[in-house]
Length: 406
Image (tube, rainbow, N blue to C red; front, side, top):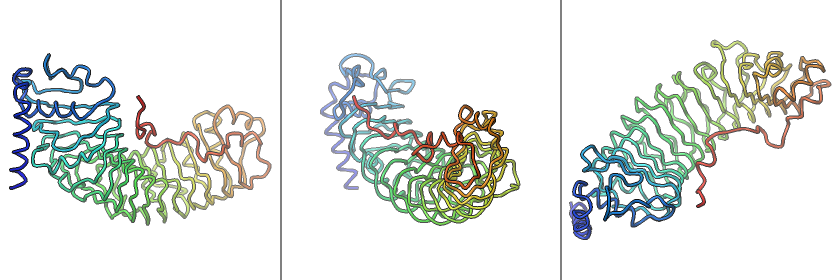
C-alpha cells in the first residue's frame, strides 16, 4: 500500500508540472497518456524520429510512431525508433489502453521490464511487446504473468540476464516468444500456452536437458541453437507434429534423432554441432520432403539414406557415414534441384558419376566430398569446398543483433 501511495504521489507531482501544457496542446488526449509521451521524448534522443513531436502545435496522435484510439483520447500503439539513444526507466509508461509497444534497434539502455512491477504502470491491455536490438539489461520478472492478453513477446538482442521465469510458459494468449541474443541462463521452462507457434531462444547461456513435453503440439517453429543444452531430445519433442522449422544447432545434445523429425510438415531441420549418434532411418515411415537439412558435426554412422534427396540444401559432413553416396543425390545436383551437397569428412567409399556428368557439378550446384576414401573421385567435385563448414548457413539474421550506426 505504501508503494502505491508513493507512486501516486510521484505521478501527481509530475502531472502538476505538465498540467498547463496538457490542456493547451491536447484537449482530447488523456493527461496520463500525454505525460508519458513527454517523458519519452525527454529521455530519448538521436535520429530524426521526434522531428514532429511538437507538444505546443498539432495533433499528438499524428506524432511519429503514435496511434490513438478512435476518439483520440488514449494512445493505442507506440512504435519507437530506430536509432534512438538514452534511458527508459519506470515510470515512463502510464498508458492504460496501450495494445502494442515496440522499441526498434538503437542504443537505449535501462531495465524496461521493471514496468511490469511498477505501481504506476498498467500494461494489461498489451498484445505486442517488442524491444529488440538495444542495451536493455536486468531480468525478466515473474510479474510478466500479468500480461494475460500478450500474443507476441520479442526481447531479442539485448543484455537480459537471469533465468526465464516459468510463468512465461503459461501466458494464455501467447503465440510468439523471441528471447534470442541475450545472456539468459538456467533451464528451458515448460511451455503450455495452447496457441504457441514460435519459440526462439537462440544464442543464450541456457543449460541442462529439455524437460519432457516441453512444448505444446501447436508449435511450428523452435529455435534453440548456441546454448549449452544437453541430453536427449526424443521426449521433449514428442508430439510436435506441426513443426516446420527446428534448429538445435551447437549444443550438446546426444542420442538418436527421433524419426518423426524427418516427417512433414518439416521444412528446415538444423541439428549440426551436437553429439547425435546412430544411424538414420533407411526406410522412414513418411515421405521425407525437407528443403534444408543440416546434420553436420555429429557422430552419425551407417549409410546415408537416399530419401534425403528431396533436399535443396543437404549438409551431412563431419560424421561417420559409410558406404556409397546415393545416386539420387547425383541426379538432383545435375538437375539443379539440389543446390548444396556437403558430405566431406566421412568414410564414404563410392559415388556413381562419370567424368562427363561430373563436369557439370561445378555449374549445377555446390558439392564437397573431400576427406572421404572415395576411389578416384572426379576432381571437379571438390571445387566447392571452403574453409567454412557450411557456407550460406543462416539462422537468425546477424543484422538484427547489431546496434545500428547513425
